[in-house]
Figure 1: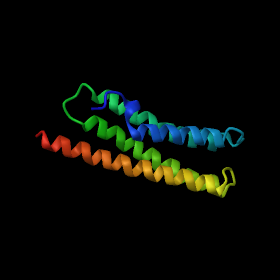
Figure 2 (figure 1 turned 30 degrees about the vertical axis):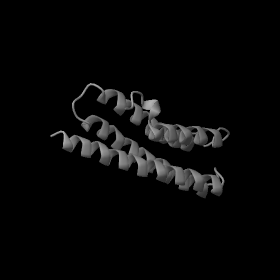
Figure 3 (figure 1 turned 135 degrees about the vertical axis):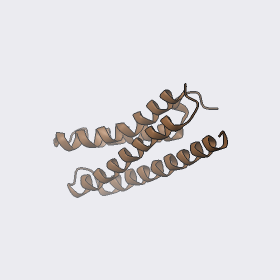
Figure 4 (figure 1 turned 90 degrees about the vertical axis):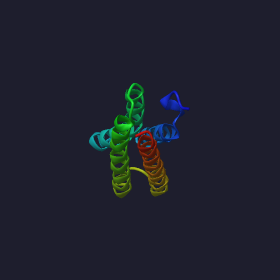
Length: 125
């Protein structure tokens, strides 16, 4: 049983994504772009944490699933912005590719986790 959001692999990978994006863009002077991609990546991580904590005192997984859905949207936004970062030469192509692959992996795992939560919820009805 998982008792803390920090134990979730999807949260751990999201944290890794955020750290790498912040590191690669720390000297970027396009503040609007930098802010947007940083906020999108942080949203992936924080919505996992918020959904986990808010769901603790409910009988269903619906609230957690809702927040995981928001994380999915933010993950796609981050991935899309990584294409732009590559097009604008803000981040090296190999770094963008690696981060997009991380986004894809996070997306896959969040979707699998949502499916698991939904099946658990359906089994308790």
